[in-house]
Length: 415
Ligand code: HEM
Image: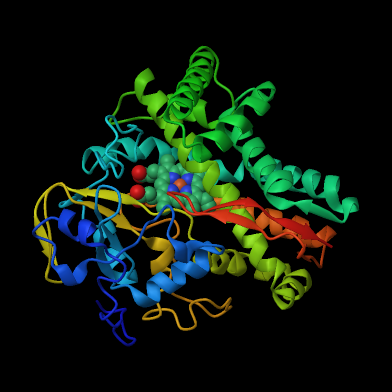
């Protein structure tokens, strides 16, 4: 607990908002003072501004509490608590977590494997996303950023989510995986609908369509390699053998579900914040060497996902009993705003030294972190080169929503 130096959070708001019915559904091993109402999909605190709501949550909730909503699950909002639990693969697994009680959770590689198997299956992804492999994409990333910004700069305004973030993230993803660009419209539709639809059958159909598109490209690359991630995965080694076709399919699904929507929203939240920080815009436009530091402070402020785990072996942590089958949500966006470790957690500051948890920590730390940082940094640089001052188009509110990904639906900007 070495990092937790500030004042302990007050526990008196525990039980707040929990109905009698919800209280009764809480498992017997959960201490009642740990129960705290939080609906991660529709919590009133998360409207209209998700991250203001997350900061209110971080300030008022205990660092670990039990939310009775949905099937009931633990929520970890403390920084050190997230770090400790994300590293505990003995008691916590990614294999079968299932927050909504769905019959068959998606099984993607390497995310839904546990060490030591996970370590073996992660190796090919680490090879495919090594800094050297990522460097070969740098030219495409720069070209795409320049093209997009050039295309909109004379308009004087745009919806950043639709006109920039989605286009950029999807084009780069398709380029990186070697997907044919004639699938661009389908891809765009699949990504947007998969994460936003409330209709299970639509989500299921999209899953199948993506699986098929990925299978086609895998089969094609098995015949003829190209300079793309799928060719690199095919030639990667899992303890001396090449990945099988089904394993490749599961890798590709992970890339699709983990690497597209996240980048769209990380970029969009970053630009929303920059739009209301004219001083930061000015500093970045004057000194581009600051951009890398700004990217990490923006990523800290705007965590996007909440990694999920299931308890596979009973254990106690900080005196709290976790029991086999309990679901655990590592609320890293809240941990990134934990006032015990970050002073003025809601402020953009240049002097942060503590690493943020937006890419999580521990064995599942995002292998796409290096690429994501490069893509965000390149877009900020290209944007400020052409559009050195910009602001929110204040007549239209940016729209965002909570969920397993903290998403922005639209971001009207003007300059
Ligand atoms: C800003 C954008 C991104 C964010 C915020 C993000 C966030 C995360 C987080 C938090 C995890 C860990 C999940 C857990 O512990 O349960 C993760 C894992 C992963 N991410 Fe990302 N990600 C981003 C972009 C990408 C990109 C661009 C790719 C690749 C195309 C990618 C590929 C993966 C993979 C393969 C894993 C699984 C790693 C493992 O289980 O060992 N991510 N990501």
